[in-house]
Length: 151
Ligand SMILES: Cc1cc2nc3c(=O)[nH]c(=O)nc-3n(C[C@H](O)[C@H](O)[C@H](O)COP(=O)(O)O)c2cc1C
Image (tube, rainbow, N blue to C red; front, side, top):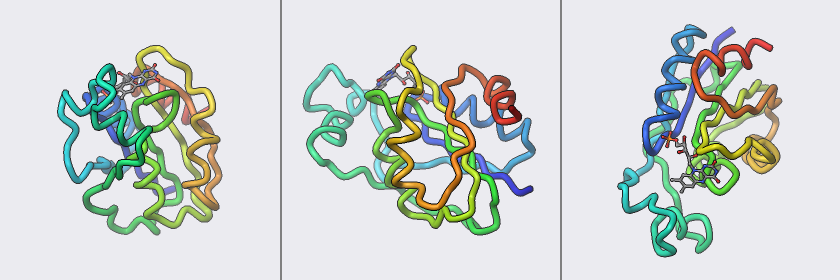
């Protein structure tokens, strides 16, 4: 089984979980990188004009930089991200749109400020056409993510 752990992290929390999970799985790891990194001001959601709010509510494009090499070689892909506005950040949708998911098993994991995983998998699934989402969970650590992956 060939596993890839991909993740987006604006503030480092999900990155830590993803690195730990990849190590436990013996998987390759790939960071989903925005074309323009998010600054602290960009994710200050209390400001209605902050980039995060414009991407979510005003149709501002969220672009990714780079691509996964040999994506076709992986049969299982873990995708990690922070919960933003109750679901995956738009940049994760954009990343997913760039690949062919048919026949892949997908494990979703998210960190959050306390909010549940909720309908995150349903909302992301149109961007993962043909994939089988094996599980979608909110976790606090790589250890927890690893345990959920193996359930
Ligand atoms: C724009 C934005 C929206 C967020 N929305 C939510 C939310 O709806 N529910 C929640 O529990 N936490 C929310 N958070 C908090 C993050 O999910 C949480 O801090 C996460 O662990 C950050 O992960 P990161 O360090 O990998 O970016 C939000 C954070 C940001 C910046």
